[in-house]
Image 1 (cartoon, rainbow, N blue to C red):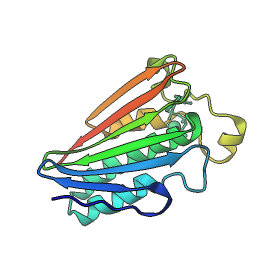
Image 2 (tube, helix red, strand yellow):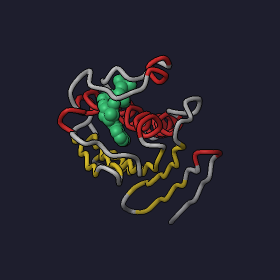
Image 3 (cartoon, rainbow, N blue to C red):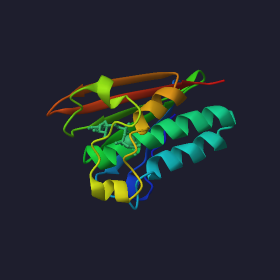
Image 4 (spheres, rainbow, N blue to C red):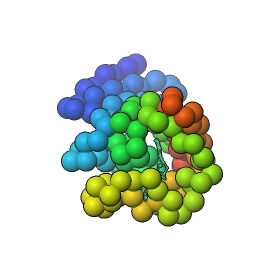
Length: 157
Ligand SMILES: Nc1ncnc2c1ncn2[C@@H]1O[C@H](COP(=O)(O)OP(=O)(O)OP(=O)(O)O)[C@@H](O)[C@H]1O
Ligand SMILES: [Mg+2]
C-alpha cells in the first residue's frame, strides 16, 4: 500500500509500507520566514498518530534545531523522517560548507552565526547541544566543502 502527498512549498512526500511511514521535506536555505515548517508539520503528524507527548516534544525540538541549522548554515537541504513502531528518526542532508570540528560545534555557546542572524534571535550556540540532549541517538557526519548529514533518533516511549 502506498500514498504520495505533496503539500505546498515543502514538497512533502509520504510513503506508507509495512516498515512504517516516510516523509520527505525540501528545506530552502536562508528563508527565515518559513524556517521550522518541516519540523512543525512533523510535530502535528506525530501528535495525530497518537505518539506520546514527551516523545513528540523531544523529537520536534531536535528536528527544529536541525532544520534551522540547515537554513542558516548550509543553504538548505533535505529531511527524511521515518516513523515505525519502535522509533522516530530523521536524516538531514545538506550540501553546505560542512563542520570543521564537530566536537567544538557541539559545545554550548559555540556559534559561527553572523550578526544579522543573531539579530533574528538565532546563534546562541545551543542547537546542537539541545539536539544531543533531546534525542536518544545523534549522529553527525560532516565533510568540509561537501556537506553534513545529521541523524536524529528518538525511541517511542
Ligand atoms: N548543517 C550545518 N552546516 C554547517 N555548519 C553547521 C551546521 N549545523 C551547525 N553548524 C555549525 O555548528 C555551530 C553550532 O551549531 P548550533 O546549532 O549549536 O548553534 P547555532 O546554530 O550557531 O545557534 P543556535 O542553534 O543556538 O541558534 C554553528 O554555528 C555552525 O558553525
Ligand atoms: Mg543552530
